[in-house]
Amino acid sequence: MARILIYAPAATAAGGIRYLSEFLARIGPARPQDQFTACTPVKFVEGFRAAPSNVRFVPVEFSGLIGRAWWDLVGLGRLVRREACDLIVATGGFAMPHPPRPQILMNYNALYFSPIHEAELRRRGLWRQRIEMKLRRAWALRSMYGSTINIVPTRACGDLIAGRSRRPIPGIRAIYHGFDPDEFVRLARPLNLAQRARLQSRPEGWRLLLASHYNYFRNFETVLRALAVVRQAIKQPIQLVLTTILGIGLRDHGYDTTEAAKLIHTLRLEDAVIMLGPVAQDEIATLHSLCNAVISPAYIESFGYPMVEAMGCGRPVIAADTPVHREVCQDAAVYFSVFDADALAARIVRFAEDRKLADQLAARGRQRVRQFSWADHIRQLGECFDECLGRSNAMVTAA
Image 1: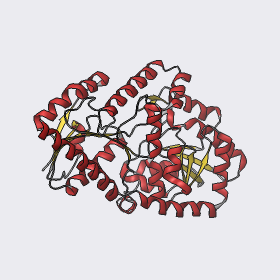
Image 2 (image 1 turned 30 degrees about the horizontal axis):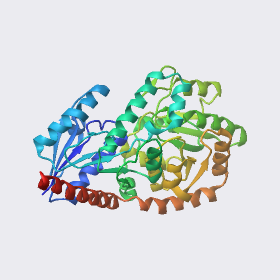
Image 3 (image 1 turned 45 degrees about the vertical axis):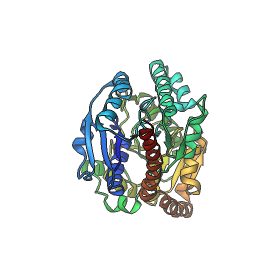
Image 4 (image 1 turned 90 degrees about the vertical axis):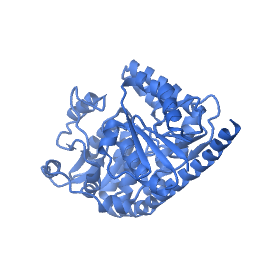
């Protein structure tokens, strides 16, 4: 029996919660011979139901970079010794730089390593965020150097991280996220009444879904500029559906939406943009069924889960032309140069006017999405666990 510590003290964002929930629900039954201790936020523990019998929770709370640094440097080491752990599995991109046991680090945040995002923060005059980004990148790299295996969700993400490091990063492994398209669609609930009413309040039209909270790297502004061009190019109504709310002075997850909100007013897009606000995860598949296509305009991603969800729902994808998007979607999407609104507009017009093309891409997406399975994800992680546990046993024997 191995004692494995799952270190996820900052799993509070929607993507992190979704992944950790699926991971913990599956890893316990897949390795019944092992005992797992999951170090997670208090709110995650309160919301997690039906934990496997071999998964036990240690809830934690902290605030800010200093609190997180204390846990990485001090709290984690104490927990490893107290629990007599054989292996550390850190899911949040940060961990111990000098762990007492083999450490697997999951590096799922490419944002800290993006030169484009750094330039965007400079353009917006966000100097504090730039400094924080550099500090996080430095700490993430130190955590990687101390890890036995570094897991990334795509090869392209691994290449980006390696390109920002001055020394080799040990044991980089690309393991795709898991996804079950049948379950995703089967378990979908109806869209809540208020959001459905908001959709139905607009005239029937061709709907493009951007399923994301607002963030500078999501590139909303390019999509809005493209939408203005599209409205001049075709007669049928075009609607952009957002799962956020944009407004002057309004922040979403700490990001100021003012620039995007002003752009909607300047381009007179008020009647073409439908802001639903956050949509529950188990209602996302239903929302896909009410839209014609999905756009993923981000200039940086580590994986791009919304594209996988779109393919699983049989929706064609328009994506920014980045290495990660190309790796994930392959020929199941059409691509546009990241900040080229005219090129994006041309792709949207083509989709709206060519049903055959949209159907072809949807069919390719249904095939492509089958490559992302939870069974493969858990199996590959298990192989990494076994490799590191062999080293852990050797360390104990040597001691």
